[in-house]
Structure formats: structure tokens, C-alpha cells
Length: 259
Image 1: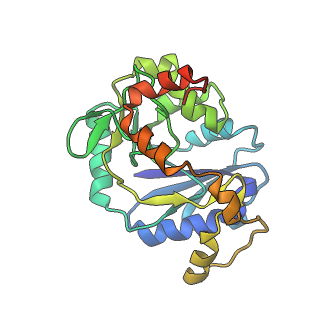
Image 2: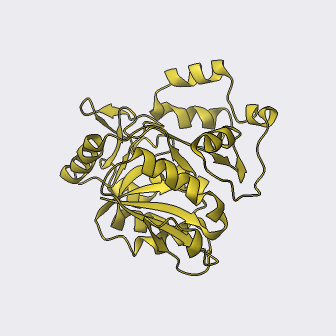
Image 3: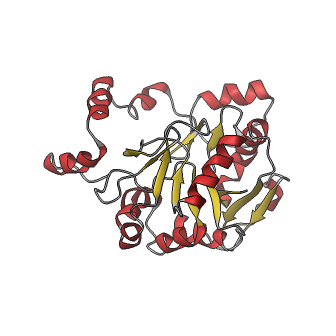
């Protein structure tokens, strides 16, 4: 199995943190690539990772596309550079996911139900309702991608946020509308520890507990600012009762953009 951590040179200060928790909690024969265009920061690349640098970092998706040339397998896991794996990964579940996407000739299988699926197929997997343009069809949560298909989507060169919203509504996605899947529960438990270039406060204590040094001069979010990122509880509850296929229609009605 192959895993690609998509990054860029300016994020070199967090690679050792991401890699530490990856190695601590994922005991497997993973072949790990770290894609990081821009200034050569090979000295900061963890020794267990294969460093990819293709020159100038023109954009997130153009860089990601360049990294794919080094991936050998038809299917691989894509992971962002600030994802922190929290618990030991069950390798039998990961193997089941790879077997499932291959057997069903899928193009995308999200390993965390965020958002959840729309049509349950069995106790492990659900299909994503691409035709009804549900939110975040191509979410950048950890997922197994079919390499040649992802390359097609990356031709659009959306920014990362637009990619999550729009790539799943392209003609390429609609051609494979029944080939997008998601797990019914977390196959990998993780969180991210950077938001808009700043650290979440929890990572400082966690790194200290694990004996990890900070080599970064990034700022930390304060609790007041973090509250702005969270939706009110009642809003979350109401949203949970609305089927995915109606969410974007409702957003249009109230003058909000699609997700």
C-alpha cells in the first residue's frame, strides 16, 4: 500500500509531528511519500518517507498532480500534512477498504464519514450520492483515490476549498457517479492540528508529552478565536436531520453557496 502526504516546503516545520504520530499509530508496510514542492527542504523530511520535490510550488493542486507521477500503484491513500493520527490503525480494515474499492472499480473511498454516505451498501461502506450533488463529494479527508481519476480532477486547478466543493460536480465525477464511496465509521481516527497557518493549542501539550521539539515559529490560536470556528449546537442538530441530497438546495434558498 502507498500513502502520499501532500505538503509544500513552507510546512517543513510540522512534518516531524505528523510523521511521529503516523509511525506511532500505524504499524504496517506502508510506502510513504512526502510531496513538498518549493524550496528544497529534504533535510527536514523524515527518514522513513520518500521525498518528492518537483520545483516551484505553483498551487496546491498543481503540486499534488506533480507528486502523483511518483505513485506506482493504481490506488493510494491521500493524506494532508497536518493530519495527526490519534489511535492505532486497524490494518485489516484498511485492507478491506482497498479490496472493496478495487472490486467495485471505485474512484474514491473516504476513510472517515465526514460527511457520511447516502446509500448504505453493507456494515462497512456506503455510496456517495454524486448525482444529487451532495456536499463535499471530493472532501480532502483521508481517502483512497484511483490515481488516474484524481489526475483528471486536478486539471481544474481549484484551490483546496473549491476542490472539495466543485470537483465532485464536474463532468468527470458525474461519469463515475456510482463509484464514490465512504466508510460507515472511522477506519482511521485522526484530527488536524493546524488551521489557517496557526497551531491548535492542544498540540503543544501533546508534543511535550511525547517528547517532541517544536522547530516552528507559528502562532497558536487562542480559545476565543477557536470558538468562531465552531457551529452552535442547535445548528449541528438541525443539520444532522437534513438528508445530504437536500442540503445544497436549502442553502440556495437561503442565499448561501453550495458545499
